[in-house]
Length: 506
Image (tube, rainbow, N blue to C red; front, top):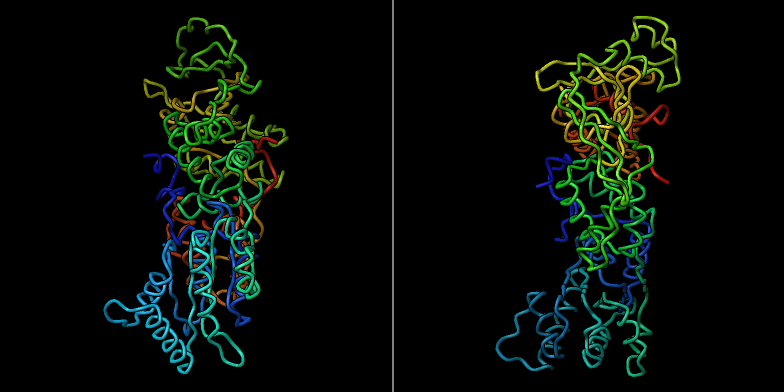
């Protein structure tokens, strides 16, 4: 429903596990390192705990995906079993033929024979138990007995226990002290901190097809507070916030959107009526069928009756005046008629583009845009800012806040930006480009995707895939080669200097 509006190819916050959306925060990477170390020690047990939804399954999936090829894995998802049932399930997972109605001893003997044969064949055996806090003490003791099988250097069966914090309390029981002593690595996974929440959002949005931010910093702060940094709760709130934002046609989401979504998802009190920024001053004008907006506060009186509509052609100014406003946004005067020729004196240049308002928002720069009124008459205006779901435009010396709905319907798809002069760029970066240029391309894409850059030795398939995705998101030809247009867009999106349409809230 909201995917097209926000430039998404799929839902970024589905709670269904999807390996494509795998996000490993610093905490997840640390947990993964601990578990990997524990398995490398050839010991019996490795322990991973954390609250519901903190990403334990994410870590375990990543661990299993990177196991050596010589490892056989038994994954137990329902540990609320008796000793006999658990051993039977282990045999099922390892494809051990046990016959009909086996006894506990018969199952143990079959598993022992399998482990010894696997070891002789140079293979390892790993058992992973999720939701292990539900294991009964006698079942845990049976697992310990299984890990007694060993050579002079290693255990024949390694076990990863994954569970909620109650698992730690269970393992502290006196009758399980022998098992606790065999744990070679343990890690308690904490929720995400606020910067990690921001990185998590950026990662999932990027995988779903959107390179630019969608949640303002105030939204990230509110989301961290309301979710407690738990990824599963973050997904639930964000999914609802996107639906609400689409319903209200809001290009960017703020704290109010997150609080409203959390009120529904978590059954919390709803936030008070939205407080508009003071900059949204009252404007009593209409623009050829465009309704100029008034700032509303909870105590504001009803708006006055609208004044008669004014045709675009009746407003002062035009392209020349719009370019003057654009130069002024960069802090530069414009004394000459040929604005774009003069821009080079300020180490700027004009960038003439066609596209949707979503692409204009992605570029996040003030622009001269074309608007058409109800009669089809066009006029150039300067677009200066976007706040909440309103856009600030200037015609001559008049400034208006326009509802997003009006701008989206009457924007003619043409716009001009002032952008910094580009540094010397190669004509093309592809598989035959110098390694330094290939690494530069990887670094730029990684920065836009809010992920660590990989150290490359060649133009590999992953780099080509990342580049194609970026080109598709930007409306460029997705050929997997970084030509002039792609390189310009990468450089422009990476530039920090100059005015922005959206100013991040503190």
